[in-house]
Amino acid sequence: MATNLHSGPDSGVGELVAGIVHDAQELINQQLALFKQEVRQDLKRARDGAAFMATAAGACLIGSLLLVLMLVHLLNWLAPDNLPLWSCYGIVGGVLALIGAVLAWRATQKFERALPEKTVKALEENLEWKTKPS
Image 1: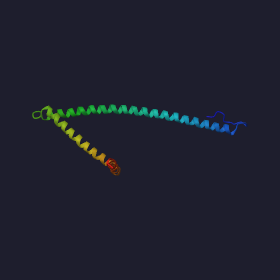
Image 2: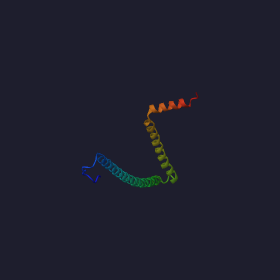
Image 3: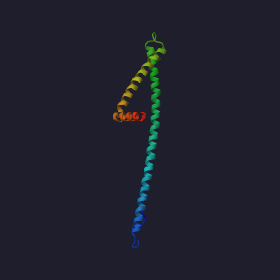
Image 4: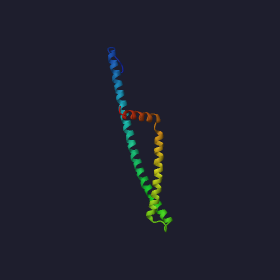
């Protein structure tokens, strides 16, 4: 900021303009410094959140694995005479694989619907035109 706020009788317009330009540059530098500090704080919060999310995902993964193992042993306990333990693992694994396949199939359908049809058709036409021998 300008330290000399009172202009004397001999100060010219050039000095006033130079003071204004200096003050504007200083203000911009201060705003940039504030912006950098805010970005650093936001990145630190995002990094901390990502680390927390990764820890939570790891705990959920381990918990899910233990629940699947529990289901296998529960199935074996419910039918101890008829089903050996290895077949219980196969049944639970097969059911989970089937669920995963159905969910993957549904996801591909949703992705196909999300693509813009006109753009895809135009791209296919362009590729066809480009690959055709002249």
